Each structure stands twice: as C-alpha cells, then as structure tokens.
Image 1 (tube, protein in one colour):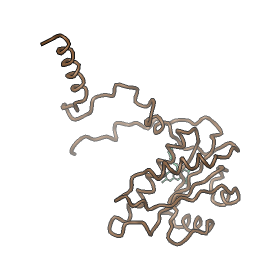
Image 2 (image 1 turned 90 degrees about the vertical axis):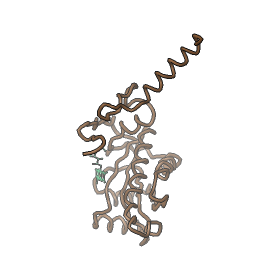
Image 3 (image 1 turned 45 degrees about the vertical axis):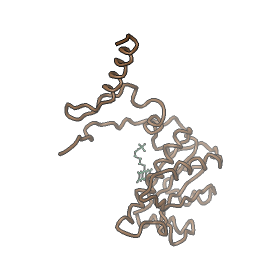
Image 4 (image 1 turned 120 degrees about the vertical axis):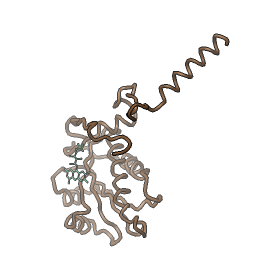
Length: 203
Ligand SMILES: Cc1cc2nc3c(=O)[nH]c(=O)nc-3n(C[C@H](O)[C@H](O)[C@H](O)COP(=O)(O)O)c2cc1C
C-alpha cells in the first residue's frame, strides 16, 4: 500500500472509531467539545426565566422572529393546533400580569380546538403548543432578550381570566403567557445537568 493510501486508511479508521457508540454498558462516549458552548446548545443551556425588564420595547421585527421560532416547532401529525396573541398594549399587559413583571410584550400561546386532532391524540395539542413556547424562549435568549413562561392551562380560573381579558373566541385555549423584554439584570444561569436522570436501554 502506498504511504498516502495508508494515511487515508488510518484517518478513516480513527473517524469511524470516534463515531461508534460505546459497547460497554451503552453509555455514549464523552463529547470532545465543551458541552454547552456555541450554537444551539448554548442558547438552550443559558436560557433561564427572566422576570424583570428594562423599559425598552421589543421591535415588531424581533417579535416576528420569536413567532417564527415558535411556529417551527414539531406538532403531532403536523396539526399546528395553535394561535399566538401578541400583546403590546400596556393596559392589557397589566391586566394579564398576575406577578407584576411589567414586560413590554406578552405573547399568549393558545391551543386552537379547530385544529386539534379529532381522536385520542387530541391532547397532543398541549405538547405541540409547549414545544412552540420552548422554541420561542430559546430564540429570545439567543437574541439577548429575557423571557418567562407563565402557565395558564390547565388552571381553569386562569384560562377563564385570560379569555375574558382578551375577549378570546371560543375555539382558543390559552396555554401560556410568555412575557419578554430586555433583561433588567444579567440573568443567572442554572446548571441542571444531572446524570441521575438518565437511564440506558432497559430497566
Ligand atoms: C408549565 C410552566 C408554568 C410556569 N408558570 C410560571 C408562572 O406562573 N410564573 C412564573 O414566574 N414562572 C413560571 N414558570 C417558569 C418556571 O418557574 C421556571 O421555568 C423554573 O423555575 C425553572 O427556572 P428556569 O426557567 O430559570 O430554568 C413556568 C414554567 C412552566 C414550564
């Protein structure tokens, strides 16, 4: 074998070996790069709930990016059973705002009964809309915005209250209100990584 061919063969073997899952107990090999730096993992891992904001407004174009991230979420059978209400009117925000966050924008993520699955998969709407909310939160963090998910559904009183305040049509069910704005302080990141939550293969 020529020297160049031999070197190519050695390099290919090294790459393939690195890509193999471990066979000793199933745990994957340790990542080589710093695990939470750069790219999507950084935006996910540094996301934290932000509940205090500066007085700065959030530009409509930025709100659109948040909504694009939300609507990129996966949904059961691609049903997309959602609607999003963007609230920028401070008088309406203060009616919604149970905890006094005083955010410049609130996005109410709703399920849409007219788009929900009609069989036993109906309740997937909660997971679908939740996936959208998480996408939105991660995107907000990636853009330097602070945001917090506040729960509405399934708390009946909250659902009723939000529907009344927004004069929401019958077919929409508010699942969550995300408040967002420029963080008033540097967010404190939590490290939630805990290997005790992980199991491999069978119990
Ligand atoms: C379903 C759900 C409901 C939540 N409701 C509220 C809420 O009503 N008020 C609030 O301040 N935070 C709420 N949160 C945010 C959590 O308190 C927060 O995510 C949790 O404490 C973990 O902190 P982190 O987001 O900074 O990682 C909610 C989060 C979820 C997922």
